[in-house]
Length: 557
Image 1: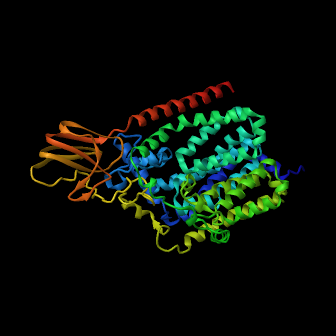
Image 2 (image 1 turned 90 degrees about the vertical axis):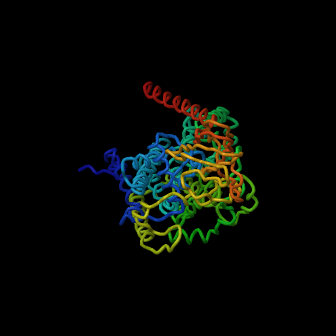
Image 3 (image 1 turned 30 degrees about the vertical axis):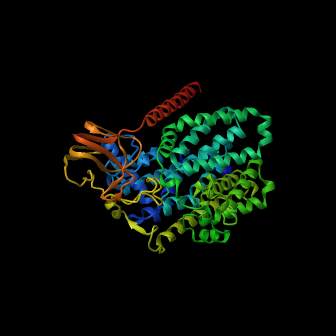
């Protein structure tokens, strides 16, 4: 009777088997922390991101399919999340919400979808470059269950970052092809970079740091093969129009007015950096927002001890992982960079994304060189990791987290979310120096004084209308946060919209104001800016070309 080796048996499995496993892992890895008893951790950014979804759903119902201003946040006064936090990847959760599911149900299904896509993208990215199914599955398994990613999903509810983690392997394929592989396929990098940008701007910055590391390590190679440098240049230029829809409006708003993010950094790197011992302690507990996990730290150490046995790419990845692990610790003088662009990283633990990815890719690529040459050892290692991860997640769910941002909450607690106070940790995109906070009535704040008559005040969706009759020049202050793009039209003598000044001796800076005289009518609403509209057109056309290219290429192939 013919005997089959483990590898041969693996090849005999149906092609859909990995996806079935990924589906099981997508559910099982978060079952006790997100699904069990309909209880979820009240993560740092959970309410903010739920409010983003609810605001997007409300805008779509009102016919605004690409909103720049979220009126659910701030109770109707409008927060510019559409400008500073691209909505692209929130549309699936929003569509679930529009079908009638509750907000938290929509979010939970969204998490499961992201989990599954993370495994699939990781699997196919590795498989595309190395053509090894066993190693590809191992990488996807380790990457999808990595402690840092699960911490983002469960404890932080950091939607932007765990979306970026999902996309990171695809971006790496683009980087690899330009520097090590077929540089003629450079167009994959700008597509990946654009998607990362739409998911999480700070992670796009980390990708740039990764590219810089590879450029330094492979300087001689690139100098000899200048076609690779040209491909990188083309990729960079191509990325700009693809992200124009978000990049240019963001820059326009930051130059139009000063926002809190430009004055007061939300975090300082030195204050949040920890020692290696503290990271080890967090890894043992397997909970917290800055959890690299013992597995990645252990594999990084093993890879360093056996670095000479690794492939050339594996060596570079491990050295990059070590570099960013050092950067994440308090041993590095972060205080030197507090007033530089590097402070935008906010949390040194964000470097763990690079540490995790580089370590796990190097291990999967060189698994047979790291004392894991026997298939049974690999199977046992994988099985133990799966059991350990599920038990750890169960322990995290059952353990007492205390009060505060990471308390456990039943799904029904989110039925009453109103968005008024859910602006994110740093409220960084409020106007700088804003001191007053108007009660969000949804209507005009009446000016006081004799000879002032305001009638027919109403608000339909996000359009304010009124009639006025004033004896002297009067400032009308609206309960709307002041951003570029608001417009006023009507009859009579009235000014353009501008930043508010005083109201009953209170400084109303940060709210929208219109100055009127005599009699007339006003209509105020957000119409956007020319740059927003042109940028939308540029990106739409650019993505159209990308789509046409792939359609034609598929027909040719």
